[in-house]
Length: 239
Image: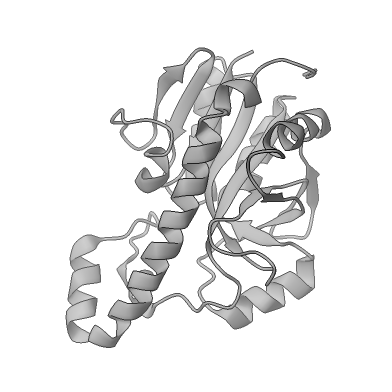
């Protein structure tokens, strides 16, 4: 079985490979492992997932960072979603055997949380909005890509797994510089970011704090990546 992994951001890519990948493209990173760099958002994730299927992937993983909705999750915590919930409130299950196998494999090495992972169609920047989403959905975390990947997997009868590490906690308001600096593709434009900081220097401490949180999430993903060969083995799994 070939496993396809969808990653949205270049910083998340670095936890899996040092190979250079253009956005919208994929590369082989190991035996029966293909990695696609999608870019942010559901549309990009869907296209990358379809590309992986065309390249022979028979299972899909959503890999990267997430925002916490539950106050119990801290930066760097690992989330292995057991259910996804889309923007319309429709639930999508993950592959139960693959999830159970992954939980068992990682349980002695990395602390993880399992629960609902919600879809966000736009950047959720405020703690108040995260709290409201947690109340509405019961989800413990959210991201912008996993549901789109899961839907492609379901269309092709391919097992799906979401592996996400928390970058921003539920009680954190994202610095305004982040949303100001995003382009239409959901990428940070460095020139816009630096320009905003120059005009609003009080934003800098929040950005530094977010950077530290993101670093913790990357460290967790790097640790999980070391187990990727085992996580994607066929032991105990059925398509």
